[in-house]
Picture 1: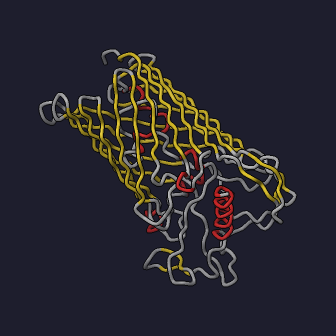
Picture 2: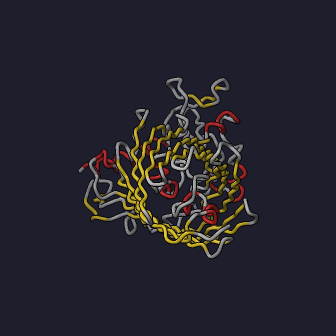
Picture 3: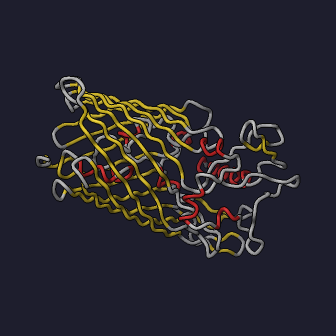
Length: 408
C-alpha cells in the first residue's frame, strides 16, 4: 500500500510540476522566476534514466559521493575508469547492494551493482560493469482506478571500458554502455502504448596523478575529469518527444597524505554539472509556457535540441542567466582515514542548490580490508526537509582484489 501511495504522489508531483504557477515573472535581483507567492520557482533539470547518476558504492557513499579522483578500485567504472591503470592490484571485483526508499517501508526497491577490472599490463586496463535498478512490484490502474494488472519495472545498464596511460602520470579511458529502461511496458496512456526504452552512451575520462614531497612519508595528488552518459535520447513510445540521458561533466581532486607507516588521510572534492538543457519555466497569466513550442507536436524547443548542441547550450541556457547556471553545479567533499591499510573511517557532505533539487546531506562510512577481501559501509543523514531515497539507510559493498601489480 505504501508503494502505491508513493508512486501516486510521484505522478501527481510530476503533473503539478508542469504547471507550478499561474504567472512567472523574472526577478533580476534573485536571478529566478517568481511564483504567485513571490518566491523563486524551483527549476530542477529533469532527465530520463536518472538511476545512471546514483552513486553505487558504499565507499564513495560514505564520503559525500566523491569518486572522480580517490584511489582506484573496481567501482571506478562508475566515476572515472581512467583511474584503473593506477590501481595497485592487477584484478578487482566489487558488488554493492543499495536499498532504496526504505524510509517508506519498501523492501523490494533496490540498486545492485557488479563491476570488475583487469590490468593487461602496467599501461593498460579493461573494465566492465552491470547496474540493475528494481522498482519492485507495482499495481497498475487506469484513469478510473480499475486494476490493469501487476508489473515489475526495472532498469539496466551494461558498460565496458578501456583505459591506457599516455604518460607515467596521465591516463585516459573510453567507455561504452547499453541502457534498458522498462517502466510500464504493455500499458497504455490514452491510445499510446508504452514500450521499454533503449539507448546507447559513452564516457570519456582523464586522470593525472603525481607524487608530492610533503612530510617524511610522501603524499600524492590526483585530479580526475569525466564526461559521462553522452549518448542517444530515449523514449518509451513512438513519440518524437524524446528525453535526454543524464549527461554529466565532473571534475575532482584528491590529496592523500601519509602520516607515517600506518596512518594516512585523504581529502577529496568533486564538482558536477548536468549537460542537459534547463527547462522553460516562464508562464503567462493563463499558466501556459512562454517558450518556443513546435505547434505540430507541442514539444518545447529545448527538448528538440540534438545531443551535441544541448551539451554546449547547457552552459548558457538557464532562464535566470549566469546566476542560475551557477546554481546547477553540485558539490561533494569527503575525507577518508586509513589505519594500516586495513581499517577506514569516512565522512563527507553533498550540496545541491535549493532551486535545483535541494539535495543536501552528510554521510559517514566505515571500511575494513583483509588480504584480498574488503567490506565498506555507508550511512546518509539528510540536513534539509527534502526527502532522500537513502534517508537513514545502511548500504554496503564487497570488494575482492587479486594479485599485486608489477613495478611501474
